[in-house]
Length: 487
Image 1 (spheres, rainbow, N blue to C red):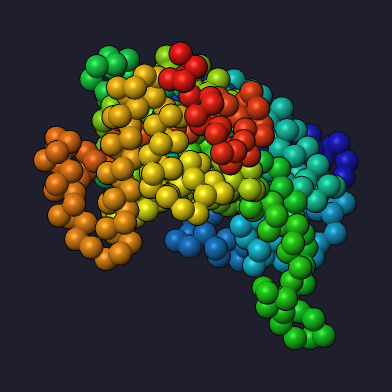
Image 2 (tube, rainbow, N blue to C red):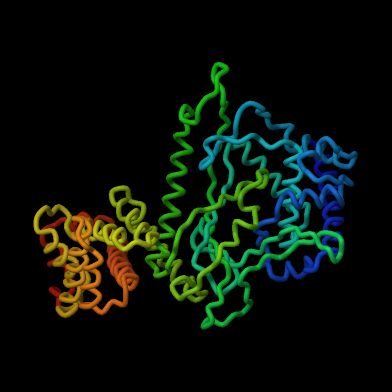
């Protein structure tokens, strides 16, 4: 590869994207200037459909018109051929192509084929276009950054992955850095190509669900919000054949990649549990993986991000809460309450408590956490020990102790009714009459709040003493360390 090749390709890209922006400005109803106005500087667009983008590029930059973008190589023009030759010289000359082997990485152990030169060309144009219209950077600088990312990746067999899921909504637009690898991003726009009968051309539609700039806090007018986790992972080239016969996924050695999957899932669940423990009603569905620019990923499909948002107080993360949450998450990480292997059951059950809807399941998950904390090394009198130790752990006076003792007793009795096949609905109705719960959802809310209060205190203790949970097994620990007794 020569510097002259790079210089020439950058010139062509600058010329092509200039043509493209002129076409879009001419035909679309909402101009790029207006789109850029709503994007925080430096934040790329979430999604632009690749097929839509290819149709515009090929039509207005390469003078090729087609219905199916996949047939483009058979209709390549002289303009396109020059760019393909430059792409091959710059990106593939020093990298050994592996036509038989597959490209394997965490969460995609089955492998995928390496992209071809023509795929790299369009994905490079798309990556530059997204960055260019959402920042003030020069195209030459954007190109260099993308090129260096490619070279680093294939020189070290590592690549960046971005994991994206929904998070509690926000009333503020912007990016909020929670930790080194986690960011909460509010209001990321999407662009979708639409046919315009008015102008007899094409234009980009700006997808902006629930966007209400400057909405007052009291109105809770939510902005779509995403939890973003960035990680550098390994990738491996593997042959799908051995001795001329296909090799199944289970025969491949993916030990290292599987370990990275577990680490990433662990960090994701730690963050999700932290949001719940902070008091935000977080429901985890699944994450979308944004691949490096040289692959077309799910994050470039705008319809993946049109999930309806339910707005109520417990699902809104206000701007003035961000700093408190950052400090809170730092304590969670330090405590390792959701990552410690010995206490892994706490992380799993807590996650289920906030992602289930059925009361029996929530009660059983909650009781597993309660028994693990308050009846450690105890085989007899479980209910008595649970109520006693739980009350001593939370209460600051005898009146509170009696209240907590009653709550733990009710939860344990309900758990026993469920486990032994009793009429748990009848038991709930009795509790609602005695405790004045409105309905079973109110009871679920109170159980979650109770578990939150317990675990927040456990976190504060773990930060001071990482071995504190082992002391919970001591016979008189809760009695000797109770705020009631200390008074």
